[in-house]
Amino acid sequence: MNEKPAVDIPASLAEALRGAKHVAVLTGAGVSAESGLPTFRDPMTGLWAKYRPEDLATPEAFARDPRLVWEWYEWRRGLVSAARPNPGHLALAEMERRLPRLSLFTQNVDGLHQRAGSRNVVELHGNITRSKCFDQEHAAESWPETGDVPPRCARCGSPLRPDVVWFGEALPASALAAAWDAAESCDLFFSIGTSGMVQPAASLSHQAQSRGATVAIINPDVSNFVSRSQILIQGPSGRVLPALLEKAWPASRTTHEG
Ligand code: OAD
Image (tube, rainbow, N blue to C red; front, side):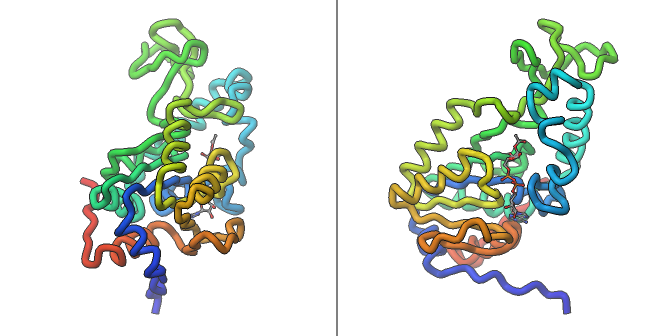
């Protein structure tokens, strides 16, 4: 027998979801784990178990060794382009279609929510498939094939970098403001697949809770989130979210990409 145990979804959460006027969702790397993309802080498999963020994900690291940083992100871009949305991404896209308003904020840079069909997605940490130049932040969709690694900006010649937020950099102001607004005005807030170690992840759920929203956490490892006023669903989001969708709207179906 290798049948997986059923996910236990509290009826009160399914009801809250079905009746919600505005649902805000914050996602992190765990949502894409079942698409084969490594998280950051899982002890054995996370990227930060194998690599040092200060060598790869800061402006100083790029200034020191732009080739190393560019090539590391090229490797990650390859993983992202080979990955496909999983049932968790698809269930969130389906929830958006069924609800009056769902605001999705993601710390992920992989674009899998959009590929799953979610439309109202705000990227807090940028997108790994885009590039911009290091000196002027010119967006770069193409560049001269000079053989330089990293390639150079066609407008100013500065080296190109991924259009993601690194440690020590500010989050895009409009994305952050939208996340705060949603946390303050939603009636239901989900924190899914994030360790909450990087701000504003932890603060957003507290803010939502202090404004009276129901807060639900979906994560296989809920040891960090023990607060009796939150709803904890322990499990992988690729199983929990479809189960939640089915419980809120029985006999619902998700469609697969492509
Ligand atoms: P983390 O790696 O810190 O946390 C991932 C979370 O996902 C953990 O709490 C895991 O328990 C959980 N998880 C693992 N598998 C899961 C699954 N199948 N379903 C649901 N949850 C699962 O990733 P983030 O919280 O996203 O920033 O990290 C936030 C930021 O820190 C990232 O955007 C990145 C990182 O350093 C930068 O690179 C600047």
